[in-house]
Length: 282
Image (cartoon, rainbow, N blue to C red; front, side, top):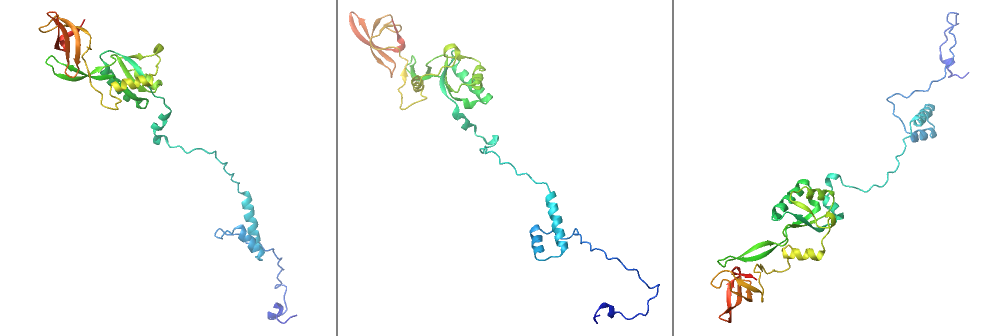
């Protein structure tokens, strides 16, 4: 035996007795150490590197347990790619004016009660605002023209005369909502057209009426006079010193409201000036 062996390191205790005999203990297999909760979990890559570097067997056991844990975890299915959806603004941020580009606007004629044109126009505008359908209407016009009138004292005044009493011009897009707003307004009859179906006006007719109403103006339009006479008209004097005299219109002064008439006096044709309201057509 080697002098340094364990058998020679113990002192000699003398001869062994039967009571001192110790039964032999069977060797037990070494149990691998279980990882404690506080142990640091290693990644599979670091475990593989450790095993290759010759780490103890319990490291390989931990690697196998981690592999089993990874297998047991359910696989998360990848989300399917969503179809391309164009970006849209939320409803509260949508500008309705951009939606009106598809609307078709035309000018139409509405039949209304005579001598109520202005009040019916105001009532229609209130109804449009109340129903919230302003985007379907662009303009409502009572066709008028400026006319110069003269009083008996010769004073000239400019008044608005209705071109088409009992009618309104309206620029609108016809649909159920706009139609309902018109039909619910008192004093409005129907659209001009066959069977009450709205018929758009011709563009040149619209331009002519709007220019007379001064809705469209390129230059100053002379004010029309109310004098209903023209040269060569046959007239009768209804007031003044020459009452019941007849004659022929020689000239008309639209600016001052006077008319020159050729009247026979003692068999001779004499030119006399009258106020336009002093004569009448024969």
